[in-house]
Length: 601
Image (cartoon, helix red, strand yellow):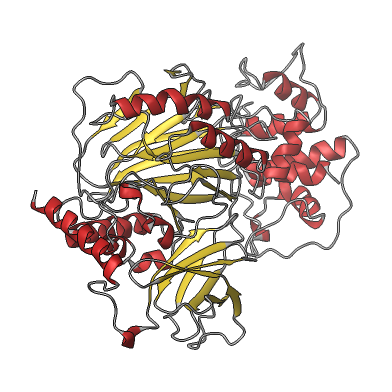
C-alpha cells in the first residue's frame, strides 16, 4: 500500500513538473554532456547492431567502432563513425539511436559513443556466426515490483551474470516484457545498469507495465529494428522483427489488441524472410500459462484472436511472460495439443506439427504467482520453483533446443528440442559443418540411409560392417543374394550379403578364426585396405603424388602399407599433426568425407 502511494505521488510530481517547468532531480547544467544507459539491440540481421543511449546534449549521436586489438591500449585511430538520430526524451534527456552496419561474423569489436562533447567509456562486443548460435530468453524482471528497486536490480543482475556465465557466447538476449514495474525512470536506469548490457544486445517486448498510463518511456531506451509505425503501435512502441542467421524473430506489442494489425505485420515479416528456417514469436501476455492469468478474460480473448494468426504463419516457438511462473506446452495447433509427434533417438520432435509455447517465470524474482490447482490440458510442463529462471535457445539449421535453468542453482528444470531435416535428409548434419557436403552427396546418391530415417550420427565411431557397406554402395557393388560362403560371424543382418560379395571378390580379410568382427570399430589401416582393394578391383585407383612424411609411418603394418601410401599420396586420406594414426579409428563423418573426395573427382 505504501509503495502504491509512493508511486502515485511520484507520478503527480512528474506531471506537475511538466506544467511548472521544474523537474525534481533534474541534472545540473554542469553535467550537460552526460551519457547514460548505453544499450545494444539486434540489427535487422547479424551484420548490423542498433545502439541507444540517453544524453543531456542534443548533439549529433555518433558510434565509433573498430575491430578490437588486444595488443593496443589506445582506441583505434582507424575507427569508423556511424551517425544516427536524436529526439527529446524524459526529464531533460535526449534519446540517441544509431545503427552500425557491415559487422563481420565472430569478430571482437570495440566501441564508444558521443554527442559531440563528452565521449563515453569504451566497450566491447563480439559477433556470432549466425548459422549456429545461442540466445537467452527471460521475462518479467519488473524492477520495483518487490517494493525495492535496489533489491530487484541486484537480483536481475545476478541472474544475468549467471545466464551469461553459462552461455558466454550468446548472440543476444530476449526479454518478453515488464522490464519495469511502474514506468519510472529510476526503474529503467536500474534495469539497464549492468555493464553486460553494453556487451550483449537485448531485444525487449513491451509489457503491460511499460504501457501503463500510455507511457512513452520504453521507446526512449531501445532502438528496435524494423519497428512498425503502423502495426501494434502504442506510445511505448510498435511491432518489430529481426533476422539472425536462419531464424526470423517477430516481436509483437500485444498491449495493442487489434489482432488485424499483428496479422498484417507478421505477413510482412514472413514475406520478407521466406527462406527463414525457424520462426520465433515473442510477446508479453501469455496465451497458455498456468498461474493467475491462465484463464483471465483478457487471456481467453487473446488466445481466441491471436492463436489462429500464429497458426497461419507456421511459427515454431512462442515466447511470453506475464504470469510469473513457468509453462511449456505440448505442440499446439488449432487451440489443441498435438501429443502424437515423431521423435528421434534423442527425443527431439521431428518436423513438428504446430507450435510450442513457453511462458517464462520471473527473471528477478520480484514477484511470483502460484500455479492453478488443476493442470491445464495444454501444459506439458508447469513449474513454480520460486527462483529466477532463464532459457537458452540453441539453434542450428536442423535443430532448435530450449533449455531452462534455475538461476540460483543452475539446475536444468526443462529441456525441449525440435528438429527439421535439411537437404541431407538428416537432422544431425547442420549445413555449416565440414562434412555437410560429403553427407549430402552420399545421401542424394543413396549411398547411406543413416543410422535412422532422420539421423546420420556423424560422430559415431565407424564399425567394420558400416565401413564395408559404405564402400560397396559407393561403387555400386551389389550384395550377394545367393550366399555360398561367408565369414563365421556374418550372421543374417543388413550387411550379410555385402560381406559375402566382398569376400568372394577378395576385397576384405577377416580378423582370424574365419571371423570378420562386423560390430567392432574399423581401424584406419583396415579402412585404407578395403578402399584400396576395391579401387584396384575396379581399376579406379587415383594417381598418386608426393608421399607425405608421417612421423608414425613405421607403425603401418606391412599388409596395409601399399594401401596407406597410395591413398595418402593421392590426398584421399590425410593425417593430423604429422601423424597418420594407422591404428586409430574413424567416425562416420570422416568416412563420408573420404568417399566424397573419391567420388566427386
